[in-house]
Length: 350
Image 1 (cartoon, rainbow, N blue to C red):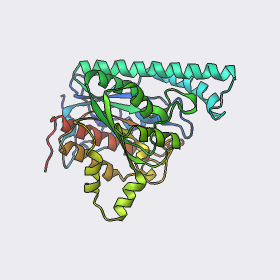
Image 2: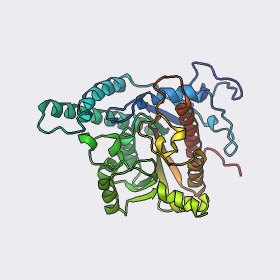
Image 3: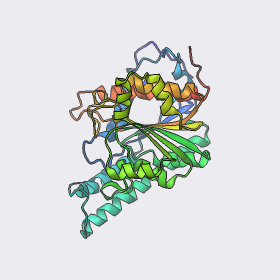
Image 4: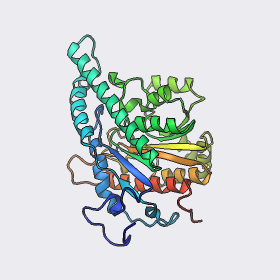
């Protein structure tokens, strides 16, 4: 690693977190995926990776528990122009359907739009799959930065080719187990449904903070109790009200997870005060430090984080409020740090 002063201000054109590490020097590589084709409420998540990059340069890199995580090397790939092109085209076609509430009927024009959106979604999945495979072949750890929550599917499929079995720790306000929401096969609201149906190597999904879901999702997950464990936000809050410690609750949350775990973090799993501009904010949710405690407890339990995704960070439409990106960048650093610690690249202090 070339000379770097972690106590100095970051330069404007520095890399993620103000670092100057190269791809070759870095153990963890971030793959940005600026995609939000099927977003049906608030927008802006395609701008999340760029906003997080800019905000990350303001993050202090010393960590009280893990000391200097950045020394392992963190590098963010440039955003692929092809994704931006696909996103623009898919979003235009998807909006025609979304404005109709997903009611396509016999409308030939809408059917063609749906076909194109789904094909572009498949193309995106293939891109993320191939890029993730390539990074894994170079012995890199991978973090996906969205974009909406549909983007990690390709990465999870690539992980399924490397790992015979693993679990997913899923932070979210939503279950994301809808069947092709509004007709879109690769909808942001269908990511976990698609994982459960198409990636058999995922043996368990533990969902945390869920508080907005439909009856179809509730019934679907109940039918798959062997593979899905849901910790509803209402139940988590009730445990707090009854005086049960967060440490005890977290132990219960982590118990169903296997040894190897992918962390899928939708920012709206947090209380909306941390992500007011995310696409679909919902009252309730985790405090930032509660979420970090789950991550640290996961690693202290001896489990390995094999990769992660962070999604649905959306900067303010006005462009003059960087709060969402600020929170996203700090959460990204925590995700990165604890993943590296789980792989024994960093030592936990205390």
